[in-house]
Image (cartoon, rainbow, N blue to C red; front, side, top):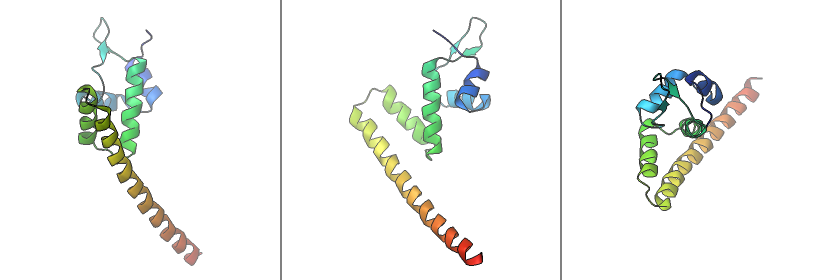
Length: 115
């Protein structure tokens, strides 16, 4: 199994090494394996999870929300629980997108007015 150093994992995922450690401390990824020398080594599965967490963070989910989702996954609760969680957050994201679109329309109107 191929593994990545923390620097390589950070490069692949676009987050800093500090962020990787933070995600691990918060229980959002991992536990991350260690080499014989005690250094963290990341697998493709870890990279997938880092990408998922990063995507959810960009979608506006907070750390507490992410901990809740990870708990649902790790407890092997029914798929309906996962779907309900994701739908709830998707609805909130749709509302934010709509609000941003309205704000952009106002900005466009002001740009046109002042041009």
